[in-house]
Image 1 (cartoon, rainbow, N blue to C red):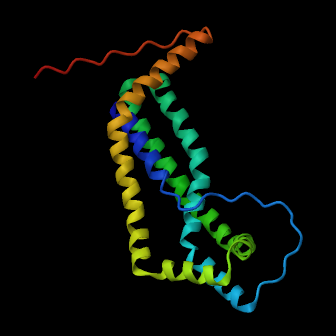
Image 2 (spheres, one colour):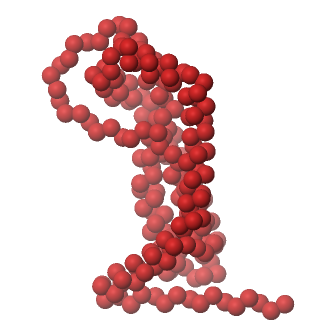
Image 3 (cartoon, rainbow, N blue to C red):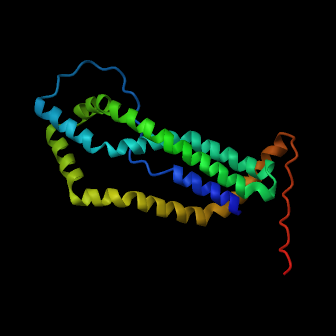
Amino acid sequence: MNKSMKILATAALAVCVNAGFAQAATPAATPAAAAPSAAKKELIAKLIQLQQPGVENIARMLIQQPVGQLMQGAGQALQTQVPAEKREATAKAIEAEVRKFVDEAVPMVKDKGAKMSAGVWAPMLDEKFSEDELKQIIVWLESSASKKYQQIGAEMQNALGQKLMAEVGPGLDTKFKALQQSIAKQLGVAPKPATPAAPPAKK
């Protein structure tokens, strides 16, 4: 994988930070259930508060898909539309734009999600868990083991992502180029021939 593609891959990896929650689908309308007790409401409110750090993960997940598609298209265009001598600088400029977008978009989505979380999660927690189960979940989330695991979770996923990129990146790059050529052939478009690398300058 060439240097410019590694730069784009690193930017995409930085955007694709670990997600601790899956986005919940809006539940279908159901008959009104009995209102939870005051004690259960308090437990639900506490659990939602403990889950607020996960709202940022959801925000990043929602930003991930469009940014990932954008980065994929940029990577393709970088190889076919940008002269070789300008690719590294262009890749760095794209990385800067992506980071700026993420830095602005994620906090905005996070703030909105924090305001909406109680209205979305409270009915689900009330329906799915008893008071005793909510107490057990809160005890676990407040435990030192849980906090330690959450702290290392992002580090574990980032480490695996870096190793995966180093291990499978070159092979995927080759397969992707073959796919591009196959699609171009089916479309009747002549794929742009690869530009041979310039020989190293003699000292």
